[in-house]
Image (cartoon, helix red, strand yellow):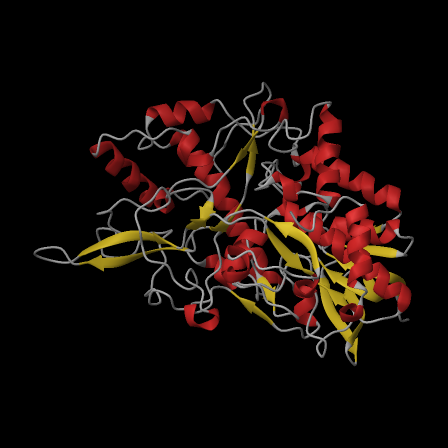
Length: 508
């Protein structure tokens, strides 16, 4: 017996914060809307560990992103912006309440299996939980799986500098800085084999594209409150895996430098109720830099799960290493031992986040492709549907090694590569960056894996931008589904009017 296909006017895939906003925006317009989520939670990174909200210029914050910020303030009875962000469980509660009030049907445990297309349109998406047909689809996943399955063109990783003439594209120079390894740390064991956590193989030439993506990791919510769950030794913890960290601490000790625990994982109590959002700071952090993330965007489910567990175990084991290994400075061990995992967060995932921080995966090649020139030069777009303002923020891409030619013999050294931070003024994000090329798909919007280069995406990728772009995508989907037009033919002027009426900022 063939299961019935669930017919909806708008189908959103991926309950990231952008996906929630898209689904709620369409449902508020009265459209029958289904939100398909591969996992068991809504909110993506906003509820999955990224409590610290990176905004940039607060003047560009509008629409549903501003509505969420106000909802956070209301939840705690404070002014907007009083905290750097909400506790993860509060973020999810806000999103769930929005979805319920808007009447969105949320389907959990629904990873995408296949997509059925007809001509230039998606007809239905098959998931583990059934098949879902829609007038318009929104791919709000971090990975862009629906977009890819529909045959929409996209790229993964760093492009060559020559492709768009971008100054900051491609492989970066290895430069000193807070995220790089200090010199003269060998990547080899005494027997000549490579240490764990160091990628092997040559780097591309400076400026060349190599397909590398920004490192992934887990943003860990921590607390000093009584009842906290201590960082414990995981079954499978491998002492040898942390030799690189020991060498780093030995080097610092020899140089007379004693790192602070807060500069290793971020211990600023920047969330309500004394909690903090553990960040990836310094050369040895929660980010996994062995290039394993490079394979994730195009990998199948089994390979993705292997990569996800590799990153999760790294987070668990790093916290244990930093609190127990005798090579870690006593001051670091003592300070981190004051912290633990909050028992009221992530109860169904061992109190570690349910969401891997996928900083970038696929990026669509849409009607307009944003590059660093659009952001740095502040190019105007008549079809702007949101604004961004966060700096170009490319996190480290790889930790590898190279020969450094010192007298009398070359020395192998560990190096970290890829980090970049360049300020930009507020810039517009056009509607055409959210839609595929007309000939490829006429009923799909993509507010997360937007059409942008690796460099441009490094600024756009912030959660507040996803929320504002999801808002725009949901309203555009409602308009296209209601009129039966292609998403490329949406009345952008009418869309802009509706966004502005909802508080979206389209220009300063």
